[in-house]
Image 1 (cartoon, chains in turn brown, yellow, red):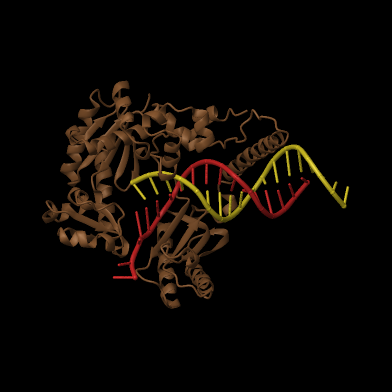
Image 2: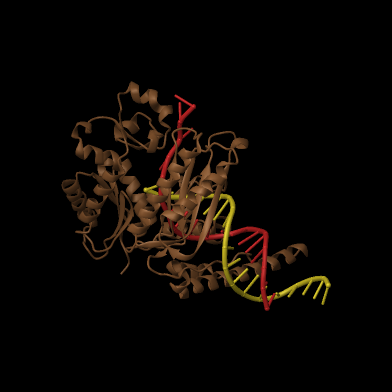
Length: 421
DNA sequence: TCTGGGGTCCTAGGACCC
DNA sequence: TCTGGGGTCCTAGGACCC
């Protein structure tokens, strides 16, 4: 049966969480700040109305905040995570098929559950509000990209009462025509600029674009977006979250760090935290990277980034010895005389804990993916060379020079796309 | 010795997401 | 003065092998 996606998205999630535990905040303009109180990461509707932008640097909007008596809160991630868990549990009462997409969003598959999807989702929204205190908006459609769009429309037109079903040719056409390309899920700033230069301004225009052109200019991800807008699903529901491929713990400091001991302290504590996360997920790391960098906002000539990676011959959990190793790496980088304001630890190449020899675990899958990658590389290389020869001879080459890499998850779409040359 | 074809593996960096 | 943190996927291209 064809999937019907419902995207459940919490309204102003961090602010809503704070309000559940402090009802005094309910009628007030509220913002929640990032680590170090550096920038604004959540805003109540009232704060949005004041023109406080998402991600705005706090020092830049401070005056506005003080003048309008906006409530300012530091973030409390433990609280948000706890609320998120309650929310997801509540949603599980309505469908067995759920994908937790982020801390405040979930995709549900509603296929076959009700003849009145809008009514069903209203019930979901009411229950969530009742059980958790968090207000949500829900978008319904046949692909994830369209469900995202539907959810965005709910936000803009409150008359939809928190739920919007984007189905039916006419309704979809209208929504696409009114959505600017930069507001499509998967289209970021760079892609939006390129599309607009090519005269494609709306989601409707993007849906009707030539797929071959799209593939050449924007790769396979661009083509997937086009298909999704056409109602052909390229991203299925992922009920089992895949195991992490990397774990990062990093922080920007509130000021420039002048002393090596401060850097060492920070790295030691991040490394410990990274180890905790690793064990929580029952994984072991195959490699570890530490990095330090100067502010992104200083003059480009004064900017500096460096990192050091250590590969572990056998899969292993994070130990005190490894943390010491990370600290020594930091020292080496520090000696270059830069003052850093950001540092972190990245654990990568993760495998289940207890697999003593990395190569013994899942060797077949690793091998297979490498083999596939290699084969595709080879085809790409050949096509590319051939194209260069033709170009040199002035022959108008009929082949495209790119082949695509196959992936388990997108088999159906990929097969179509793979027919190049 | 030189060259090309065929293949493998890895990494940096771009772009995007919340 | 002060500008978040944590992820994923894809591509190009270099190094290397027979």
